Amino acid sequence: MPAPQTLASLDLDAAIIVAYGLILPADFLAIPRRGCLNIHASLLPRWRGAAPIHAALLAGDAQTGITIMQMDAGLDTGPMLLDAAIPITEADTAATLHDRLAPLGAGLLLRALTENPTPQPQTGPSTYAPKLTRADAAIDWSAPAATIERRIRAFAPWPGTEFALHTATGKTEIIKIHAAHLIHHPTQSPPGTVLDDRLTIACGTDAIRPTLLQRPGRTPLEAADFLRGYPIPVGTILA
Image 1 (cartoon, rainbow, N blue to C red):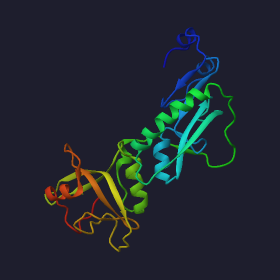
Image 2: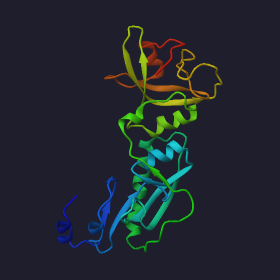
Image 3: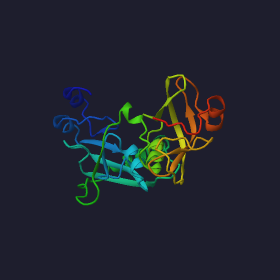
Image 4: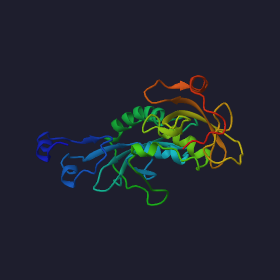
């Protein structure tokens, strides 16, 4: 971030902030004549914070969008200039949703420069989307399969989703899941149990079937190719 005196020397009408991840000080925000505008990837106030795209997918939201917001001293609490919504599909990942939102944000920004800001709604859901870490990649098999499937899409490509496989030789290998199908499959097997030779995996409720997997240092493979070279026996319990 430039020093306030450097920004002031530019004699700016407005400053545009995108995916910065930190709260800017009030003296910085006040320098441009029209303030600092933020392209935020959520229909505010639905998801405030660092990871709104991931949060919308994790929650199973039917739609998300872009809000052009005039920044204030709070965390994504400033008044809004424009917003626009798009549907979230069952095939969307964080990467595909990001790529659909990006041009929407650019178009809105040009229009927003002529708009007057209005306060964010005081009613409706206002939720914080915390910053993700590498530790978020671990799968909790006791969660419902629908939750895990959304997690796989929400965390693609980063931080990803992964499980630990304890091999017969006593080694532990971390396997990444890049894509999976939700399988409605009631089972009494413990969560994390491999149910068949297609790698259907029991969850807290129902099951998932990975379709794209990756071993450490290897190329991602379709599930059938992965299992031909690296079979995981039925009954294996994944961690």
